[in-house]
Image (cartoon, rainbow, N blue to C red; front, side, top):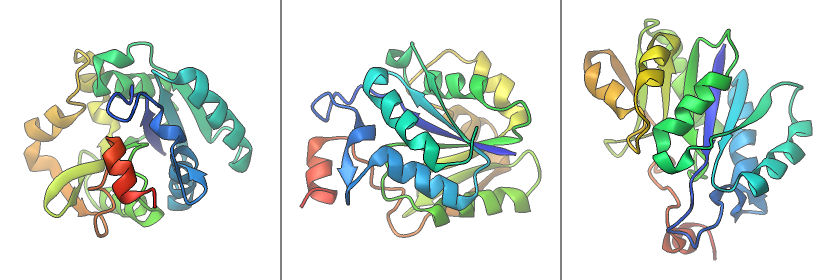
Length: 203
């Protein structure tokens, strides 16, 4: 069983302090698009991690739940969202199904990722050994999504929260990392600022 952790806990300080999950592209919120692509890719479960804008993002998640199988989608609040990305990953790990063999971690502000990108990560994992870490690359640069097997969960949960996410794992176990090239620039364009949104999303 593979669970997706969809991280949507950020404060959006560089995008006029608004939830990126509720930004829209082609008539869909970033949240809805991400969930649809994860479902098409065949993820067994999705845990959405909310934080700074929990009060406005949770209703969006709840309103979308009926579009997916019962129990497939859940939301968890990370009260320590100010401490950085790793804290949200830890909150997601604590909430995923006990039968989860690995987590695929992705961000809600990567709207160009498609089902094929997520499916490619899953395929890369299933072809390798159980301890394999899988990292996406775009134009030779590391990006999301990444996939981390259960064997590494205790190590992640023991770390102090930080902005670095799980990059420490990929550095410590570089010999176990497989890479997957995401199509075009799908994983390389994140929407961090209003300038990014205007350049890539808004006409």
